[in-house]
Length: 300
Image (cartoon, rainbow, N blue to C red; front, side):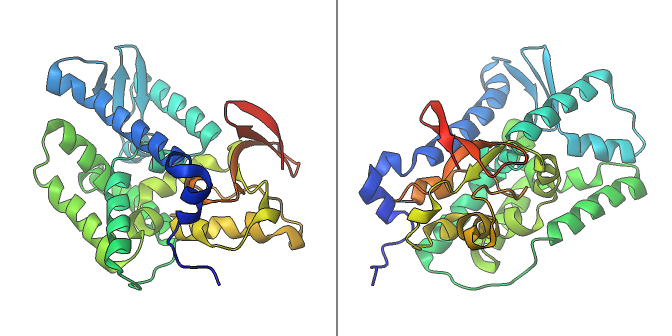
């Protein structure tokens, strides 16, 4: 019988601490760098990026705009400016290539809050909790869009934890602390991965951009799986793993095809058998070009 050492313990023993936390450190570095680019302006007067996650201008030249916010604005009866349309086109193209939910795991500041809640929940041994289908987030997404039509405003953005936290960090938190604290307590005491995994309409919207994304995680060595379940334990969308990992007998390929995969790399980090890798999917074929270090190699 395997000793219960906790998710990732075998990976640390096999790959070392750095090897078992590579993608975590890259994600945290990216999240903090994105925040820093926005904060050095108001804090130090170095305006590399002006604005926030809803709309920003980098170096006074490159516009980036949130397509979810733009869609709400259109439904509210507002016509976007040309720079906003260009900014949305850039963002949509980027996330269509790398996967929409990459926004959730590599950019969104609320992910830092919910990850702390999940870590603390594990350390405190909090089990069980409420249950909700992961489709709820799509209903909330629809309600946010209907709300824009009904009110003629960006009503959802006044209570969206993602927008409120990011604006609060730049301009001052104010009442945003209450919303962020509510998300933290929800994830800690009520339901594991509640906000990001079940309720967030921003994540639901970005998942729609990932349907045809070529960048995927693949269980390229799934025959080496020892059923430790560590990947299921750490994955914020664990339902996406089983078809790729256990679907060989049904003829299912090893690539995780679900648009709700956040491409966070957690499963890669915690797997002591190196079952998972990032790769580029080849449409219509049960193969990926797996990325090993800095060089592409055959895989799948």
